[in-house]
Amino acid sequence: MSIPTTNKQTVEIGKANKRKYMLEKLSSRIFLICALLSVITLLLIIGFVFYKGAHPFVAEGYSFINFIFGTDWVPSEDKFGIFPMIVASIFATIGALIIGVPIGLFTAIFLAEIASKRLAKIISPAIQLLAGIPSVLYGVFGLAIIVPFLQNTFGLVKGQSLIAVILVLAIMMLPTIVTVAETAIRAVPQTYREGSYALGVSQIGTIFKVIVPAAKSGIMTAIVLGLGRAIGETMAVILVAGNSLIVPTSLTDSVRPLTTNIALEMGYAFGTHQEMLFATGIVLFSFILILNFVLAKISAKGGN
Amino acid sequence: MIKWKHTKLALSIVAILTILSACSDNNDSTGADGGSGATVSISGSTSVGPLAEKLAAKYSETDNTNIEINQIGSSAGITNAISGVSEIGMSSRDLKEEEIASGLNEVVIAYDGIVVVTHPTNKVKDLTMEQVKQIFTGEVTNWSELGGDDMEIVVVSREDGSGSRDAFQEIVDYSSGELIRNAIIASGNGNIKTTVANNKHAVGFISFEYIDETISTIDINGVEANAANVLQEKYSLSRPFLFVYKEGQLTDAGQRFIDFILSEDGQLIAEEAGAIRVK
Image (cartoon, rainbow over all chains, first blue to last red; front, side):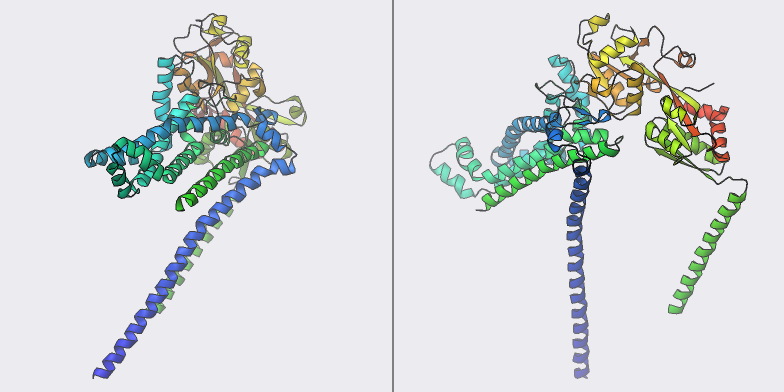
């Protein structure tokens, strides 16, 4: 009686094992497909943007140098120069960094080192919520609050300006900087703090002399990620930038960053004009690639 | 069990096939009925397009004609009408001489009016066409030169490629390259209106249908911007919405659609869509 039962049991265990291995194999296949999907999507996007964007320079005889350094963008007259937009993108991003990085960094330090747990529990979710707000709402906020504020308080003739873009971008990059920097600061070993205190250094001294240097690579990562957010932002910027085609010389000039140029004109563009917008995308893409490269370098350094 | 599944499958396939064949029968029979069920291909202006879409939607309720509308811009639409790619081209500008010479007929289906707008507090209420040009090309940069307060002018324009911008520039007679460089570029009529309504320095242009009390409208050469003045050809900042087709290329179905547009019903739809009726 007992022998057939064990036989039956081994058979069933074998069956279950087989099913388990099948499932295991199947799952790993599904994971592989998912992983490949994002790689394929990336390749398709790069391929498409480069194919479309490179066409005018390869097949239609436009000069890439004139495209990058030309200051005239008049598609209906066959003039495609994106120099004003490159400058606008760079200025807007740097400006946003100048305002956003100190605020973001201090917030992160405050949350990780100074704030009581109760206070941090209120501020932290608020900042994370800030990250979840759709970017077009930042634009509407900018258009309804920041633009009139600049016009009325500082007497600007138009509130749609570089400074408006900088303010909106600075607010938008805050959550990224705060979250990543806070994690980096919290990761600094407790022994560093204790050692510093033991030597009689004050809390603020400890933060700036010990903790921030120790969390340097994490903080740099936070800044670069914030930078990426700023340079790629479109919908919020399009509403407050003014989109003028001038090389900005002052904070009050209205500007047209690279992203805005694409979003603004893609709806009507066809032929060479459309391809030139894709070419604008290539330039934007190059910026992002450089940023990612820098990010990878920083991470590698942090690892060492 | 398995057999039953197969029967079910077979049944559903038969059912689908029956429905499909019924559909195609239906198409065939209506196709034979005096040409309804025919396709009219229309392409052209992005300004006329939305109106044409509305007219086509209304028309398809009573007639079986299939109307295909592609919004690709006036010039491309006219080219298509000449080459025969499309039966009818849509244009929001007058035909050029060489286009008329290639045998195109035009039908005005409606008019569109463009109005120059400023902030309600702006004292300037009347401009000549020349002054409008000077403002938009940056020759005049202060309202005081036009009889207003001493404050800078902020020009607001649509994006390059917009049909309204093309029409405005063509009527006022300046090119995209001449547009003052620091002009604010806003996408869409609503966006221009908001920008002008919130900035006392600003001047922009919008379609008639967007006029409301948040902005102030400017008379051109002393003529008020309204539909009556457009129809009497007194108000010059207006443009015709044209359907163009090549002589002899228009099918019965196409002719019936144009007749519908020019009928009382069609013109009412045009008016609802914000255009100015022909009659």
